View 1: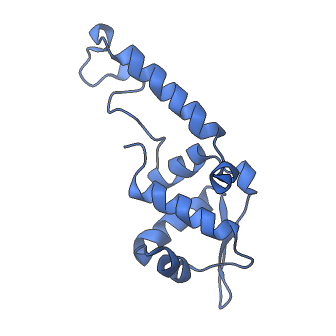
View 2: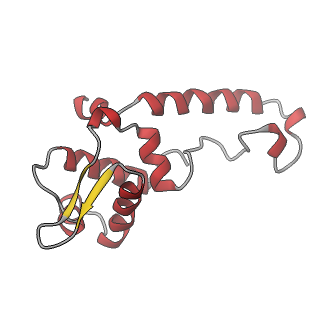
Length: 134
């Protein structure tokens, strides 16, 4: 599940908004990025609700970054648009919540748990600035 279309579109929108000198509305963003407007509007609202974007209403309204690109982590972006933290595997993140109740005998759970921790750390450190520079 790590990177879904919603996360991809959120990141693309943030890249475009980071270079805009005025608010951009969802229709303009949707045309620029070739993303369905209704889907993008939900993503933008999630980013605004998370405090990543600010929305302005009216004729000259739209969305602008509320934070500096260096303050926007990819973990924050992905969590806000997905409604939960991105997961590499379908297992439960804790042994006590294992749906099969076999975590104590699962030979790969410790590895997957460690991998998830490393990915969470990486995404938490990776900012919009890092993506803009690549």
